[in-house]
Length: 440
Image 1 (spheres, rainbow, N blue to C red):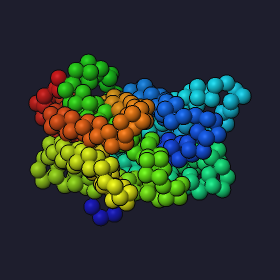
Image 2: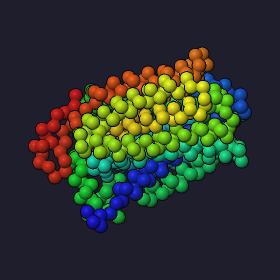
Image 3: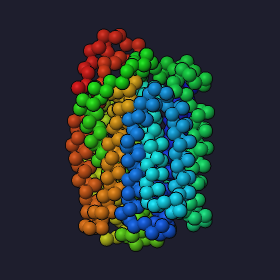
Image 4: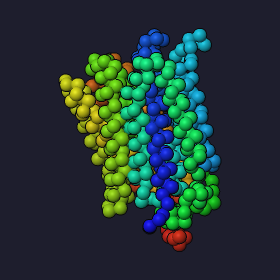
């Protein structure tokens, strides 16, 4: 429609930036951790505990974060969360052995940081459920989660440079400051619903409402906990996202250290090579979102959301099995980069399906699903160094590859056309919504 405002596009881009900053703040420790470990005398296994602490805090608060985003709105909840995680990003650098056991202190601080960052994606998906028509959700989620690759890709060179110039502590202070600036921009620009935003014109509002279930604009309903906890779809998404989290956190937590210690690269080379998987994640996340929407429009939601994800997982498995066996560091990194990118072809599907099936309860269901991802990440953060130490790095990647096969099988049983509760499209007769089955 000519002249239609595009505020939703601007706010999706803001969520992309928030996503990038969130991952910059959580991945910086994998780069700064080399110097931190040397200064404090922390071995690799105990550093893994610190990595896992973030993910435990992140996982435990996923469902409460989704519930808060549903009740209080994504604008305020995200702003408060950014203030919280900026504080604990800075505290990562401030803790001192003079305060007590340094590993324990780092575990507490990183767990608190994880709790703060747990809000980002459940709140973001709650925003999408209110602002983005169903036919645009693949691309919107593609952009938001492209921020994961962008933030993680920026982290190695940026943090390496900051560490070289100002020491490892400076990297946490600067990342905290960046978060505060972006959080302020989000609060000024965002609104919880399109009808509340002064720059959304009537044409854009009509376009948004035409692609949303009527329930989204209706009165607030109690959270259907029984329907959520007994849903085959929800548990399948949880299990498959567990496998996803195990794989991607191998890259977030250990890939930089794998290059430095297993491939014997220096700090500069590790930073350059360490960017590549995250660049691939960014590009493939955008591509996956576009393919998702295209297939959903031409072949139906099952092809767009589920079959794409099955193919993504199987392709990832092949790359992860092959990469560590290659002698050449350059070729090995190229293959593993392909695995990281292939996995992110499926990213938008996870979050699009939760919005498809959960309606106004998207924040809660997204949080529950994302808890699976973070549990997988917490396990790989601690288990990977143990496997690598005893069986070699190839075995660590083999375990991740095997899990992706399991995740592919689980995705095949997801049905994105079966909602948790009966819903109707805005403007459609109520009987049309009543005819839809309740997921059980």
